[in-house]
Each structure stands twice: as C-alpha cells, then as structure tokens.
Image 1 (tube, rainbow, N blue to C red):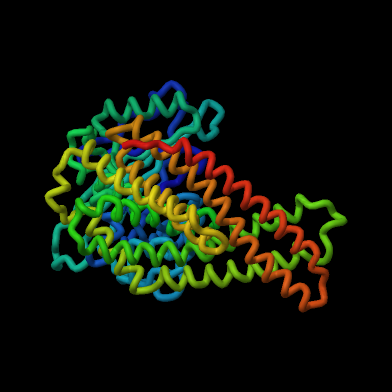
Image 2 (cartoon, one colour):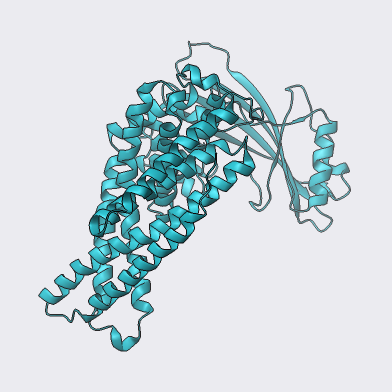
Length: 494
C-alpha cells in the first residue's frame, strides 16, 4: 500500500524504467517536497490452475508491507474495502476460506495456489503547501513480478508505476499534466489473460442479425447477473436471493423458448438444473414474501380484532421456515452438482452449439418463437375456464409461469423489436402480477389454516386467523376478476 492520507483517489501511471520524476516543487500549489520515504511491499497472488479468478476479473493476494501482513481480494458489489481484507493467520500458504466465500461461484471447488509474486520498492514524496501541511503525494514504484514455478534464474517482468494523489482537484490536475509531460502514460488495468467477460462491448443487433446472437447476448447478461448476486446470497442478503432466482429463471426460460436454436443437449439438462436451483432459492424467498404479507395483514387490522399472539406466531413459524430454507441454499451452493451446473452453463453461454435455426434473422425468428409461447398461455387460460377450486388455482399457477416465460422470451427479442416486444413484455408482466396476487392468496390461506390449527391446539384464540382467511378469499376473488378484465386486452400479436 502506498502511503497517503487515505481520502484521495490515487492517479496511476505507467513509466519507463529510464524516466526520472519531474521537478514536483515547481507546481504552483507545492511549496516544497518533503523527505522521501522508502518502503517495500511483497505480494503473492493466488488463482486456480486454469486462472478462473483472473478470467472473471477477480484477485486474491497475500501482502506484506509497512502495515504488516494481510490478505486482500477484489471487493464484491455491496462490500467495503474492509470486507475484502483480513489479517494473516494460520498457514501462510492457505487462503482464509471466509475471505473467498463470495468467490465460490467462480472457484467451484478448485483450490487456490500461488501463481506469481510481486516485489515492489516504493519511494513516496510528500507534497507540502506554504504552511508546511500535506498537499498530496507522489510515489515512484518499481515492481518485479516472478511467476510461480519459473525456472531458477528466470528473468522477472518489470513494471514501473508513478502514483499521485491530492485532495485538491486543481493540484491533482496539475500533477496529472506534469507526469504526462514527463513521459508517463495513464495505467490501464492489467489484462486478464484469456478472460471472456460475461457482458462486454458487442456489435449492435438488428432484425436481420442471427437469432442465435440475440439469444447468446441475453444468456450472457443473465449468467453475469447470476454470478453478481450469488455472493449476496452467501452473505444472507434477502434481496440477493430474489435477484439470483430471477436470473436463474430468465436463463431457463430463454433456453426453453428458443430451444430450436440450440442443440438439445446440454441445453435440456441445464434447464433441469436451473429448475432445481430456482426451487432451492424459492423456498427461502417464499418464506420471506409470506412473512411480510401476513405481517402486513395483521398490522392493517383493528387492534381489538387481533386476538392472541398472532404476529409472534407468524414470525416464529416463518422465520423458522426461512432459516431452514436458507440452510438448504447454503448446502446447495456448496455442492458438486451446483459447481458442475455452473461449469456447463458457462461453456454453453460462451460457446453454444447452434442448430441451423440459430442463423435465421432475429426479427421473424424470435417473433415465431414468441407466438408459440403466447399460444401456450392462451391454451392454459382456456383450460382453466372449466375448472374450479384447487384445480383452478393450480391451472392459474401454471398460467402465471407461462406468462413469465412469455415475458422473458419477449425480453430476448426486445433489442431488435423494441416497440412490439416491449408491449408483450408489459402485458405479460401485468398478467404475471395479477396471477401472482391470486397465487399468493392461495398460499396465504394455506398458511393461515395451518397456523390457526396450531394456535387452537395451543389453547389460543383462532378468531383472527379465520378473519384473515376470509379477507384473503376476497383478495383472491378480486384478483380473479382483475385477470378476466385484463385478459380481454391481452395483445394478439406477434
């Protein structure tokens, strides 16, 4: 770590070995250059044998410097710098497991090994203002990089860096101009050898582009979303469970709706694995949703109609359900089945095995596939009209899943047909929400029956559970009517 105040964002430059630092004291805001401080930093970077971390833009290192010895890794979304750093302890060659828990979707059970060691000599020059106070600093760093396993006497790679920082933006701009004038170039991020980013700059797609390109872009985006939210699930963030589940469902739906564009295997078996993963995530998510729904119902009731420890029983049962379901998630996310599914999914997303259909123009080909999903939804709704009770509820639950599948299929299509696809997405999402309200009511009533029976068995008053059950029946009827009305205006195209 280069010395500094810790409040400024350092500017990094690459400099040739022969360059000399320019006269820093000539800057208008610098009255003098303080006594330089020289330090040493040793950093050992760890990775898998196949460079999985580097391919995904991640890093884990053991660093020894003036602050001591510690481990540091790339911070994940939602984390602070402190979350990505831990004190060195135990075996110096073993990465602390807790530090890389959020990397498991990339590591997938593969061990981390030292891949290179960087020895850095750093000279830091304090910049002083007219009052003798700190105005900023500039560091001159020379780094020797040794590959692990290199033959004795192998020549190391040499990097020269100039690093500058100042809290005052005017001085920071002057520093940048001065270092550039001296021959330094802004440092670029170290290239990740062999890295295939999940989402990166790509050519614009239009209606004449191959439908395979359209599908692959969507799959890449959703796989990146899955990997992005998976560490949040491991940290126990409730919204992380929801986001990862949605990405999982989108991947599965896209593979199903556009199945004629990809070879049957491994796409078909991966859809099964994605179904399994969504189901595991869904247990915890459903407990979250149900607890909030029931608590809202209770809080909306007049105080004199809430008889007994209703809220306490809701929390007790559903928090227990959530903890149990979250335990199942942690178990699944550490399983060989999960890691194998990610390996196969990453391969499919990067290099799909296409059928001849994948070369068809995206506009008409996607519209054709979406028509098939729309007919599927229409057929399900027609069948439900002759049903009632539990059979109707089950048919509407399946219709909701069909509406969601249609929505996600239209999302794939949207980049090349924004107006028509957007209308389908909006309509399908509206159906999905109404049917979701109906399904939530069905599930809520089942919970209320169970809790009411348990309360009665414990000698508690069951009045409130029965009242809430009746309110949920009314909610279900209202949702059913809203669906019938909305369905009349559902788009008949593509």
